[in-house]
Image (cartoon, rainbow, N blue to C red):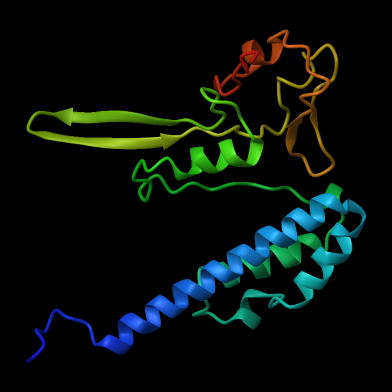
Length: 196
């Protein structure tokens, strides 16, 4: 039986399967390590330093043709060497590549342990063009992490604050639900968490 040109050889499919299996194993190990770090926060800095030591420290070390994740790890290792006050985190979203899968929304819900119906990171869908030339554009809308966030000074109990690295955070235990931050946010990103 001859193979069609579009079929891939068996060893190539096996290789992809084994790569996926190794990736899943690595992800499981990462989640286990994350749980351990959350249980023992005093060891987190030492663990991050050990992890950073195993990653290439520069893009040149990682190689010009290195995988994007390796380059990101190198950038992260370089950033973690700086003092927290010297760091400024940013997030770049390439809207040309967003397909509206909502994976970022689901990841945010899982990371923040949000109840059903509460979403901090919606993806806005927009229809552009006129029939018959209509397309859709997807716009993820996370917190914009303003340099001078208007939601911070209006909080009467200081539940919304900017940490040492400039990241806007919310202490949900301290929040009284006054919604002043919702009104202050110029992007309409802040959402009310409904009582259970």
